Length: 511
Image (cartoon, rainbow, N blue to C red):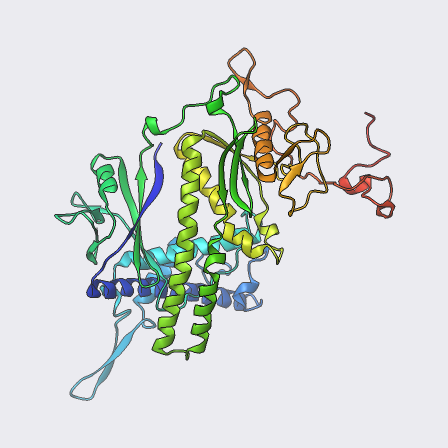
């Protein structure tokens, strides 16, 4: 089954090529903003026709439906296809450009020129910008109708112009038996050829990508050129074949797995970024949190103050903004490089991994821990482990969010409800176990995965759940958590009543 992956290289353009790339970045920003303006104008006109509020953000209620006309006379573009058609119609109209011609006789006539500079850039740049806006509008509507998971997505905003940032995307097309996007074309192997732009030099080696393309193991889909802090980057997205069987994990057996195929729990934290351990208490990986943001914060503050001292619109302010952006990029690259190293080490050495379902958005509401949680990038680490393990035919399961992995003893199962964040060593009061807090959580996660999978053979070649598995049919939905003592009646008796957790004392069945 094919997989999608990307190769990212740093570009080394000339002065003329950098000017052309800047034009394409500006064209993508212009097309996005103009398509958003057309969408908002159409919504405002449709709402005025229906006698409703003229604010575009006020729409989106039960009477609005994305993808269809809000009014019978005015069509509101919602999808990328409609936005492309609307922008193409606008760029040929009088609103996009016109000029007046005066004859020697004094007669004056108007000539519609449309967007005069559209021929300087590739037309796909305009189309892909409209597609991005269509995706943003869909994410906004799905978030409002609660059909999209994750944090709330706001209405798309206009993109600003600056000395750094911005990107554009180009699709790979084939014409006359030759692809429009080529890697290592001609004698210069460290290069990428783009339509309308030419041959761009890259700093890294492209041998691996070129060999995959030559052996028909990869096909270029599109490329994305982005502008960073005084640097240009290109990401080549390809549809590649599966990894070689020697680099993939063997399928786990039906019988209880062997030691090398046992479940490994991965506990993510702030003191230690990741701690991995098996169910028998063996620690297989421990990585201390490097805290990339905390290390770079003093310089980040100094550069931020330097930007605020400069006069707005001056050249010195632009230089200071570039220096500040370079520091942000340095912190981001350090964090991303470490996360890739950790995820690669985990998926290469272990075929069965279990992660905990963390409510990262909720935990970030704590003002004392918000910066540290964002710096740890737990969500990005889980994302990398998930897709890399799928490439290697491994398995990743997510433990129940309410499973107390840190407060449960990995030896006897006793739960310590008084365990706080400052307690780095877990001491069991039942069996006397003394173990590192993070390792204890990782061992509990591995044991949870062994009890919630299908490792037992029923005699007919089918795997069945272990005896006593409370969640073998899947995670519990609409579950209530209750850590306080239960008392019948009101909450004033020192704990939650049975009515608070959905169970009535009078109607509860007998045990």
